[in-house]
Amino acid sequence: MIQPSFDDKATPCLLLDVDRMTRNIQTLEARLGRLGVPLRPHVKTCKSIEIARRMMASNSPGITVSTLAEAEYFFGHGIEDQLYAVGIAPGKLDRIAGLYRNGLALKLTLDNSPSARRVAEAATRLNCAFPVLLEIDSDGQRGGFRPDDPGLVETAGELTDAGCRVLGVMTHMGASYDCRNAACLERAAETERRAAVTAAERLRRAGFEAPVVSVGSTPTATFARNLDGVTEVRAGTHVFMDLVMAGLGVCAITDIAISVFTEVIGFRPHAGEWLADAGWMALSRDRGTASQDIDCGYGVVCDESGRRVDDIIVRATSQEHGILARRDGKPIEPDRFVVGQRLRILPNHACATAAQHNGYWLVGEDLAEGRFWPRMHGW
Image (cartoon, rainbow, N blue to C red; front, side, top):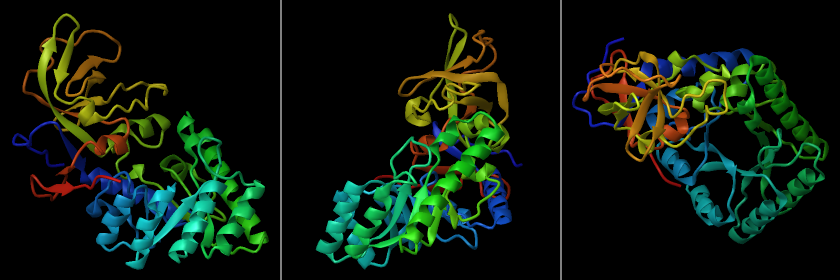
């Protein structure tokens, strides 16, 4: 790979290795292709039209979003088929009805009966046939209907009576992030699939077509062995990967495509620790690896070219400072770094770290030096 020269870049900033990103996208596409199910990429991770277009395979049904700002941004760039994968807040329904009138095909997610009643009321008031997926609780960690919940069919009926279109079900196996080995991840993927398929079959027996069965997370998408009955998979973190994914065994550290570019600004001789100008405002406060076998602090330290530096992590952060320390607690040598040296920090959670920045400075083959892709913000 051509090594970048970012001497003119103000630190901290976000780097994106396009070659790694492309490989990550292609790897998951190939896996899902073998299982015969299309990917509906979750763009909350990238929030960038340039990246989202690369995440959409030729057979992608559309994208997944988590905010209405994302929905509006990607609709403005021509992507009409979207799934809003968060239980809808009733206060957003007037805004959504306006988007529908402009041509956005936004499927809503409903995870409880009271919210469904509010949507039904709004459908009548606004004369808007909201398309809806009912969220299934496949792991007991978030909202949703249990597959055998009587309220599932009752809610579908209330929505249909109000003119809404119940398109099927969706689920997210958040418990997959608690796994520590491949066997656990395979079981999580099967539990996710079975819960969604069972719920969809209940709806169909009750007279609803329920053509959509949507499942997914990056861990379960990676470790699924059977997707019978599933019509689409949602995943987003795979585009960048991160230290949490590496800790789960979903990827290798060398697959992580984003990093925070930072500069060494000082040394703490009494502690044998160095300071960098990337604090939690640049790295985020996410400590997702703290519960894993290997705690990476607030990120893993690499040199300017992206090679890991010994076993050094960001041990602690303040708003604009990162404290670099050895994982084993031994002091770092006073000559290990120099003030002004540039480093990269690999993130715990790609979504959270990327959200701290306005865009991506690109690294990779055949890219004009200094090329920048912006990302959107807001709700």
